[in-house]
Length: 122
Image (tube, rainbow, N blue to C red; front, side):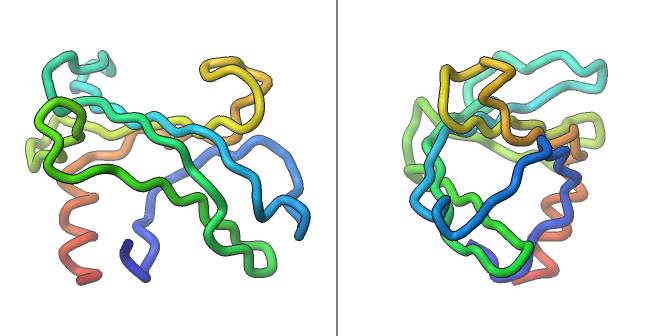
């Protein structure tokens, strides 16, 4: 993972994290959207994985998920195309896609901007 956070806009549920939460885990789902906000359905457009807290410093919390590289079926491919967006959700305890378990949402972010930022932070 990059030591520099990628500037994405996350909308967080109002909840407090303390030292007892460092062993918490949950599930995340990332997916690609087209210019109309419709989910893409091709291979490489959606991925899911469990997350865990990796760092808790003051008010800053990092939720980290690990994805297997080289999997020919389950992967997420970021593209430099102007009309593609990345969005995602992170859930805590409870059923996935259950609104009461939703922790935060990644607002749709243009993938070409994310790729440029990742290249600058290397």
